[in-house]
Every structure is written in C-alpha cells, then in structure tokens.
Length: 285
Image (tube, rainbow, N blue to C red):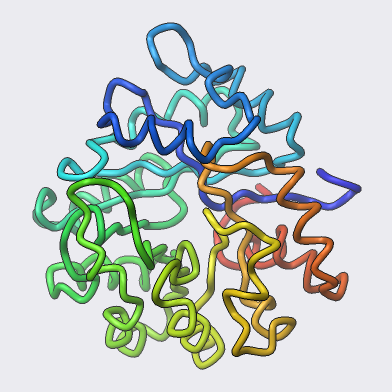
C-alpha cells in the first residue's frame, strides 16, 4: 500500500532474460530510470521470486499481474510457465496473465484453456509484436472463452519500438468489431493508444462501458496532454494503473505523479486499485 491505499500493478514483465532478444534489455535499461530492477534477478538472468516480491512490496505494490508473451519475431518467447515460481512463492501478490499468438497456437482456445488451468486471470494479446490483427477470426474462439469465463482481454494498443514489430496492428480501431461482438467481455487497451491513437482509445473508452485504458508506459504527468481533447476527470474513471515494469522510474514516483493531477479521491482510488478489482477476478482471494 501507499499512504493507506491499495495498489495494483496490472502490467508487469518479469521474464527470464535468456528468453529475450537484446532490444528488450536495451528497453528496460533505457526506461527503468533509477529503479534497480536487476536486483530481482540472479546471475543467470532468472527472476528470484523472493527478491521480486520484496521489490514490489518495497514499492507498495499489493498485487501484480505477470505477463508472458509468445512473440518470437519481436521480443522472444516468454512462456507462462516461467512465471509460476513467482506465483507459488507469493500467491497473494502475484497473478498470471495468459497470452496467445494465432501464428503459433492452434487451436487458440485449447492453448488458452491450458494457460487458464495454470491460474491465469486474464488474456493478453499483442498484435504489434505478433504481426496479426486483433480481429483475426481465429481469435474469436479465445474471445468466446473469455466471455464464458468472465475474463477480461488486454490488448496492446499503440506503438512499439522493438524490431520486428508491426505498428499498424496497434490501432485500437481494429478491435472495434470485436468489442461490439463481445459486449460482455471487458477489454483493456494497454498503453492507452500510445503514440498516434490516444484520441481513438479515449473515445472508445468513453463510448463503450466494456473498454478501459491501462497506463503502462505512460508518464502520469503527461496524461492530461495526451488526452487534452477529453474531459480528463471523466476519462480517468476508465484508467487502470499499470507500469510496464521494469520500464518505469518507480511505482511510488508514478503514484505521486498521479496524485498531483488533482483527480477526485474516489477516482484516484479506482485508478490505483478499484477498477482492477472490478476487472480481474479473484485479486483479493
């Protein structure tokens, strides 16, 4: 907790470093600022569950959603199994998020079932790193499964600097038909439409009850500028706190920066934890 407020980081990467391409390490070093993220790793480049849990606790993080990723063309394959030791060590703090890539997983529903059986509480898809459309009909079986299970879908929205990425697939509008076809599924636009699509993402979040924006990778002080064409306090009611750890200067710094935006107390509380508690099942169990 920070100042007595529950804090949920809904966007965390803690992969084994040997599974990554060099660009990921360069990204982490560039954006981590003074945060000593590598202190959570051993000499072989594997995350140490006790150290990662301690680092998160020191930063006031009560719950953290751990992402895996199957994107061999951009960042590498980071299997969900690599996150299991963190969850076993600290099942109260850590939760798993599934990831599927239709170019690798067929049928996608079977792979999603397998990852859900390991304890995943949401599905993340990364069209930009995988070079596929989020409206690919093969993914509809996964969306249907999420609808049946009451699980949210997280979509990378916006740009990515990793070689092999296809930024055109980061356009949130590509998900518009899916959102209409699955109104019972909650969709989280990770990175809030970063880059060229802030307006699109914000419009979708305000127009649709089942669309949310996670703040991963976005400096809080710049949010009012990114969304200058919108009622910021109203839009903030659809924000979900996430950091893209380790690519941030620090959780406490981000929380302080959010608090300085002058949002109503209830809105800020929902950004830090309330919205995530509504979206992701079992975070408090």
